[in-house]
Image (tube, rainbow, N blue to C red):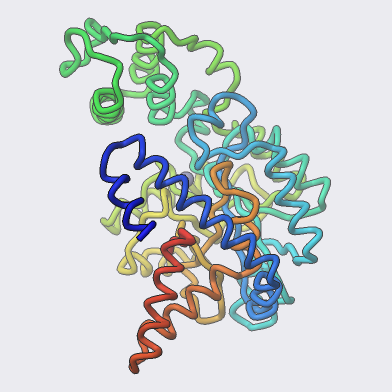
Length: 390
Ligand SMILES: [Zn+2]
């Protein structure tokens, strides 16, 4: 009865809807803490000891980008805590190439972990590299090279960040050469979302890089945001060529992530992305370029032959999960981490608890028999409650 009353109240308005979300979140985290306390994380770690965990990070940040993109960014202190968890849990951190070889030859050590960082943001060098070095952990950076060559903030991210930063009540974007933005606009979420999308598309499709950058500068001025401060911080910039070469010199594994951060369905265009990415990185790195990460995690199985043709050994996705010898080498799962992920959730992923819950749900949910069916439904409900994504 109490839960029915709650649901009725929830329908009353957005404010209470938030409370419902918060309640679910709190319940979810309590279930995780209870599971850990009850030994289920330990049990899961044992059950998944032969699986490969591949961690995924993007940007590292101590400024406002952390609040703007907590899924994309992680604070260095949070990252340090994750590394301490890996260290204390006696996980074995391997380089990507060795881990992939040993995954498919079934010779992985127990509790093997690979650390990957996507895109090649400048702050990887500033914040992540010294930490990983102090732990003695090998890691891979998948570098997308278009903005490495341009040495400016990434236009799409910069546009989103500028609109997020503005505190102007009304936005006047007239005279910026944006055909869809004459007149004034109210600063409210729906309008901001629309404008951001339109400016990003316009810049990408209609302008060359110098004009795109000029547009971002004038847009910032119009939004009352300090452009130079963002540009100087390099928070949304990628590493330069010489910085990549320096990291490679220190033994960091550099791998492919497409030149323009896209993975076209057309075979010829996809090949061009790989070739241009390879051509930009090859003179800078020590290692062979034979591993790929799908930009934004977007791919289709029909594209696997493109990677085979390019003689690549693996490709990682943005789908959550652990890997076994039967995981396709061009469809490797990862554990997506960021400031948004609570420490207990990270531990649930790392221990293999989420993986065990998935397997349990799959095994029971698809079996016949009334008891198994109801247990399956329970597993599915708990999966939803726990917020596991795959
Ligand atoms: Zn990426």
